[in-house]
Amino acid sequence: MRETKKCIIVDDEPAAHYVLANYIKQNPQLELVFQGYNGIEAMNYLRENTVDLMFLDINMPEISGMELLKILPTHPKTILTTAYSEFALESYDYGVIDYLLKPIYFPRFLKAIDRFFATENAKKTEEAIINSVSVKVDGYFIEIELDQLLYAQSFGNYVKLHTTKRTYLASITTTEFEKCLPEKSFMRIHKSYIVALDKIDATEKDFVVIKNERIPIGITYKRELTDRLKKLEL
Image 1: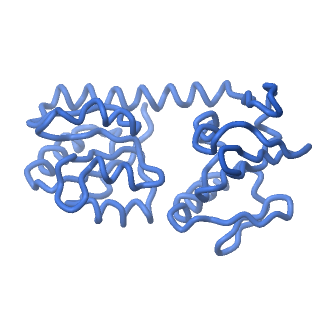
Image 2: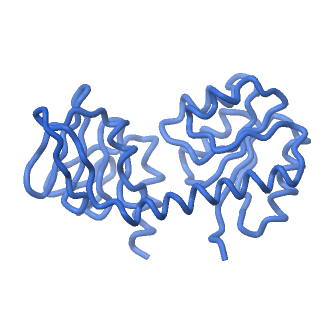
């Protein structure tokens, strides 16, 4: 039995909401938790809530779907919905997992959902086998054991990797390094910091504490961090 995933619909057309909401209700593995009619509503909701999947229309007033993906520091897995196909190639640069052309038919919707769950299963498999990350330090590649990594800190086009043994200056950007890490164990909590969730010793209003170091929490990451830490306590 698949785990139930939270999803949202962001579309300025009521008819599109009706169709997608009806399709989602027929899939017990999906739970519809929010329906927004523009990018601003979606941004406000995602700042305060964590979801697994977003059905996102491209052509919306004020903020288009593509602009929303560019603005959000992090976003859920996304399935685009639109009456136009010219954005298909560009959309995959932003981690979009599928592209539904309106009018959306149920068999095509089911195919997109299967693709979403396939990416979720692949992520779990990948996370299960990742024990270390190879990075370039002083011109040589070394292996950083992930169970020793405390947090990563942006340093221009480099990243400072703070481990239980020492600190390394790696020739990699924070965004590139983040892609190497298993999502289950690590989280970006600020534009300049990624932390190992199980290494957090304490949390304050605007900081987490790891080995007596106070690391800032960006405002757009606070709610997700709270939710992630609650899950670890369960």
